[in-house]
Structure formats: C-alpha cells, structure tokens
Length: 88
Image (tube, rainbow, N blue to C red; front, side, top):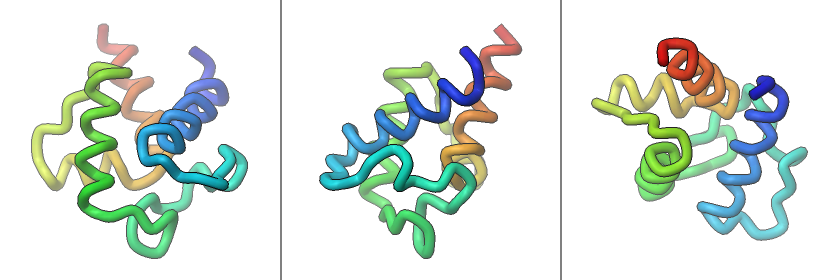
C-alpha cells in the first residue's frame, strides 16, 4: 500500500477507534505527536491504539519504550507498518 494511503487509513482508524467526534483526517498532523502536546491522547488511548494495530496490522508492541517510539505520530506508526510488511 502506498504510504499516503496508509497514513490516511491510519488517521481514519484512529478517529473511529477513539471516537474523536468532529475530527477529520486532515485535522491530524501526520508528524505531530499523538500524546501530550500533540493530539492530546492519554494512556487509555494507548491501549486502544495497541489493540487496533494488533487487529488491523498485526503489529505487536513488546514494551513501553518501543511503544513510545512506534506510537509517537501517525508517521512513525506508518513507518513501522511499512518496515514490518517489508520483512514478511
């Protein structure tokens, strides 16, 4: 899947999974942090994201440090998915 399509799909999934009412994919900056000062997601949202990625992309987050790097932004999630697809 082209990176642009993957990024759009991730934004749509994020909006749906976290029930971000009144948020459009264009409202989410691709490289902005998803947590704290960025989109403002919290630790509960992390769990939802990890479950979503496991179901949709078969991505597993092994530990908190790895999770912080992978879940930093939509771009880092997309990069990780593309890297995993390249390995298979």
